[in-house]
Image 1: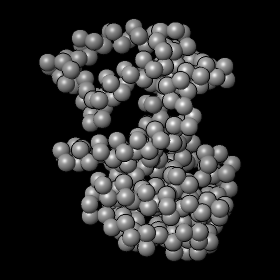
Image 2: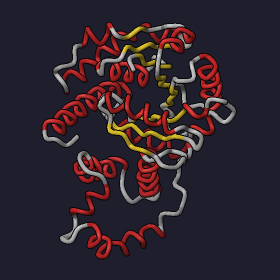
Image 3: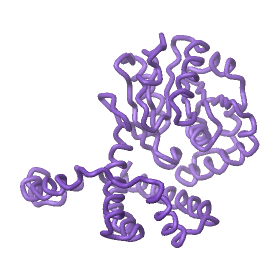
Image 4: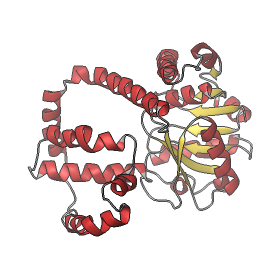
Length: 310
């Protein structure tokens, strides 16, 4: 496998281009809006430079030479062995796009979607090529956060799943296999559980948004940077995870009883949070903060690699 197709020249698609090109693949990029390529090379160069800071063997110029941008969809489909779709998170858009990809590409080409929440069976429900379609959902930004969820549908073939896994293994991804289809997959369901509880605590006046954020960034998040929830509780009781569950399980059961109320995601709640957040971080500083986030992620990723925490 040498050639990868990417649908979408925006942030996610650009990040995929950096990932696949640094992993030795030739990359072909299509976007229905050619204007997205005006700042494309600058964007991908930045992502490759961030990857080089993690792995000094990355040759930025060599990677850029492996990327063919703004190619016709027909050309892309004819040349590649795998396609990663990163179109907007709109079901009808993805359905139409997958229908075109299914018609244009040879039957051996596996087609993955970067969808954040839509199961592949909904996207491909009317396609003859369902066997070669799956979700390959990244965290954002993909080139700095290596987790990729592989989420097949009931009709996805084992061969297609294994081919996708091989590509992402070569690309240095941490592969999460989702055994059964579910909206939001694993990552966004876990994130959603935390966000919903944060919204409940905030809207009911238990703490400010800034203080709720602090419990994660200065508390739980420090552990979660290198271990998940099950390993965390395995280490938080003298006798391991079974001991933890015996000691504290009843506490979490009682809390769960009060976590059934749907939190306030209304427009009014959004306006209130917006006012609070803009006092902490002005709108003019959003991009600067995002850049610092990427810098810190880059440093953290390198620290984990250097300490065999990959």
